Length: 250
Image 1 (tube, helix red, strand yellow):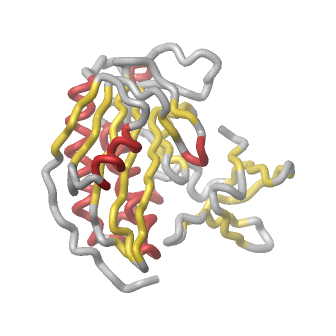
Image 2: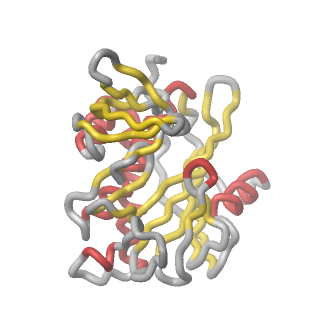
């Protein structure tokens, strides 16, 4: 792992808001590549038609009920420390949800769960030059007011679980404040790692996974600098990427 602490460029977020977009990440990348936006610009939509999650999954939601946003960052972060950014963003989203849902957990690598229901998801797309990440597009979706998720029994919202009914603008303001704070803390990587693991779902607990149709139990360990999950299998420990295994106990 590179012994490098990023010189984090502090920023105040500028938000461009749209009523509807195909994808906030896609527009953010198009505008950045056209030099129309820069570090610290956020794209926010009241509705996202083709939102994406991890591994190409769809992020579905209702118009005007949830947070859909993407933040553009130019951090010059070494590639071998890219998961630090994931940790910082996941903690920022968790900080936001904690305003309403104390006890929210981070499900490796980038989902936020409350009482076994997914409340928020993160998709980070990096542009790399040599050994550095030169641009990161951070997509975040938070279920805030939506009450009906159809057949998606594992999806939930802030309103479903909280006695409060927050406005979308209030949740967004909390999110931006926490993102700015957590991104600024990238130069304290050990503290980020400590907090991420402290709030990691099933951390140091035995749970069930599936790999190529085979079920197995393992104790959840730490996440390495490349974002791989360390599982204690009893007789040995192994590292797994998100493409290798599937959670069964969720």
